[in-house]
Length: 188
Image 1 (cartoon, one colour):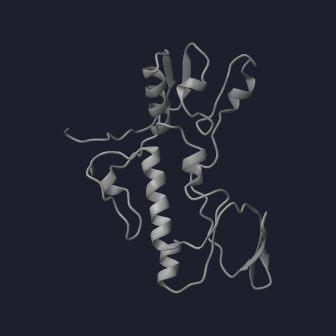
Image 2: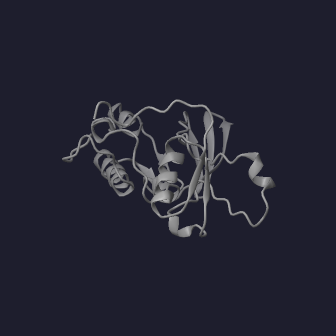
């Protein structure tokens, strides 16, 4: 969005609660890999430049890609600026942050689709001695207690985590509802 606004000469700011790629740095597990192949993972005017176009980016590669993109487009970033309130104002919107207030004619809310962990209500009824962890809090198998693990959810996140935890030597069960899972590769 920032690149497109800059190309059109529209003055703007990008307010980021943390740093560039904050949710990738802080709210994902260490071994995460993108679901899309490298050749397909791109941003406007900025694509993959490595030697493995059919591979899947790792967490450090995703972060480095986003850092390079922000530098290349010279994004007007206001990092460590958490928006605490957004209300209609006299000529647009009043944006209140933990670093002051902003006035804006237009606001684009680009929080992403995966900012809140979806924890089933059943989790509240589990005995206190059953440790629970959302995918946003999980980093690697080393933070888990010994013994078996139940992974609830079999989408991309659930299957990646179940595989990693299983490879760490723990027995894993995965709980899956109805869903369609597309293969990562086709015919090899």
